[in-house]
Image 1 (cartoon, helix red, strand yellow):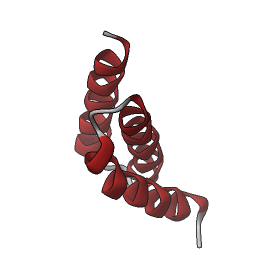
Image 2 (image 1 turned 120 degrees about the vertical axis):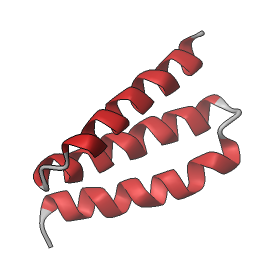
Image 3 (image 1 turned 60 degrees about the vertical axis):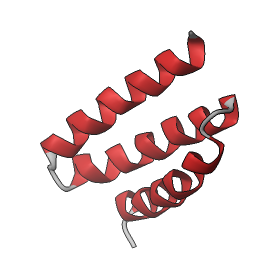
Image 4 (image 1 turned 45 degrees about the horizontal axis):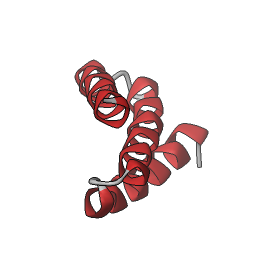
Length: 67
């Protein structure tokens, strides 16, 4: 298994858990971590649309976490 595939699986698991606690700081951090891991897989597979979506989502969750 490639590192990018492992990152994708870990990111997917993180994103499966994040919505249930998204109102907490831990939920937002879990979503940011999950999206970051999924971005690694998207970059490896040259999926530019998903990379952009993930980066915008990471920025949004970071904003929600800080403000």
